[in-house]
Length: 129
Image 1 (cartoon, rainbow, N blue to C red):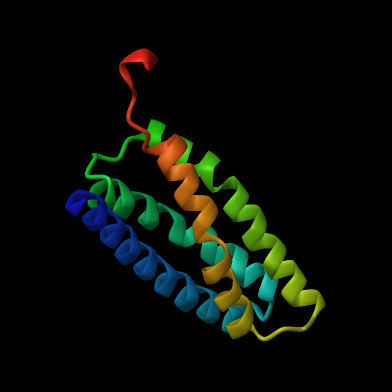
Image 2 (image 1 turned 45 degrees about the vertical axis):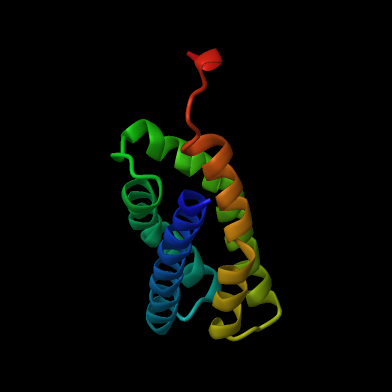
């Protein structure tokens, strides 16, 4: 049970750090491009590699590989689509960037966690070998 709790605490720490980076990037980029859609989309793409490396090394305690990063991108597809959609909706509804970035930070972790556990960082069973 202690290992389980430790892993999820690490996951949460990486998630919070990634969320803070995302919000900072989204808001900084918005001040340059003045577009909710472009700033939220670019912030996602820019914060993604650091999130993967942090989860790989800190949460799952595995060296990052290009293969795992490819899987991480596939697993992030749903998250990316939802992030871009939220940005587009925020633009259509003239929502402030601060509101849109908070919605993204709250709405996306569940799909990413599931894909990480079930696909990207899944340990192979003897059956899979």
